[in-house]
Image (cartoon, rainbow, N blue to C red):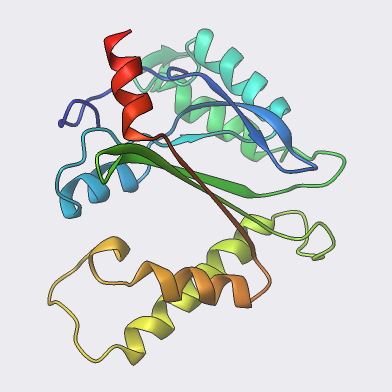
Length: 208
């Protein structure tokens, strides 16, 4: 969502390196299709840009890039030994026979950056949400991270006195403060930083 409108971008575009807490470190991220691009732009007036970037294990990203460059993720029907199938379907069938396994730990971390004007001054709020390294959440901690956040949201909805009607995104029906507090109370690490540039400095940079 850019310039106030939804747009489509090619796979592996929007490359950006972002630093995450240990043990993750710096990671190359790419534009990722996710619901926030649509819902945030719909339910929060005045937004001009919403982007979601993501990544998996470096080994997975390297493999996906090779598959993409070779056309193996194409969904165009292709004749293969007398039958018709898509390269993507063939790739899925091959990979399903031998699941990929990776050594070391798997960590899940979410970084949210919100930038705009507050009292006329450029302001950026940055949230980093992660889990303790010794949680013992198996090799897929995103399962527990997702489940905990969903549980907190469901409990807030159940205890709310007045809710809007209809099928809504979280930002349209949940107060973010008790949600973040509820997530942190369940062992998820939430870090917040705020940076604000003074109006005089902002004006000076604009003229430069």
